[in-house]
Length: 84
Picture (tube, rainbow, N blue to C red):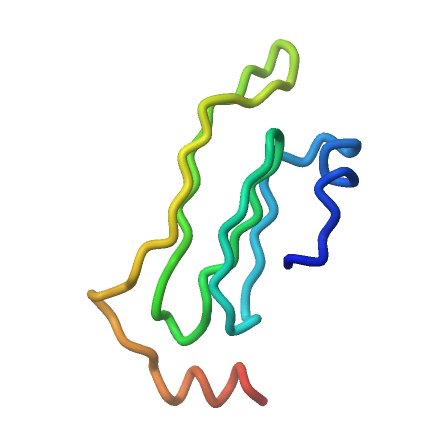
């Protein structure tokens, strides 16, 4: 995730990039894009909210966080399937 170029995201008009199954927590922002990965094994999840104006396709007022998942634990059977 950290290798993604913010300039490319800005040029393409991408405001949010989320990744998964990479086993790393990552949250980074620049002036136009939020980059987020929540880790692995259901230990956390990403939360992003923002305003979108469909009249001109602009975004604003980003609020992003990584939230530790205390309500659930990983399911070994599902983890085995995903790891396969």
